Image (cartoon, rainbow, N blue to C red; front, side, top):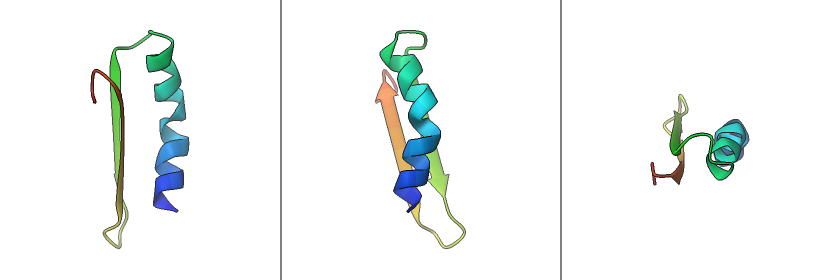
Length: 45
C-alpha cells in the first residue's frame, strides 16, 4: 500500500522530469509503523 501511495504522490514530479521541466526528483515516505518507499527520477537517480 505504501508503494502505491508513494507512486501516486510522485506522479506529477515524474511527469515534470519526463517533459524536461526539471532535471530530477526524489520522494521518500516512512509510515508510523516503519514501512518505507522511495521513488527517484532523472538526475536524482
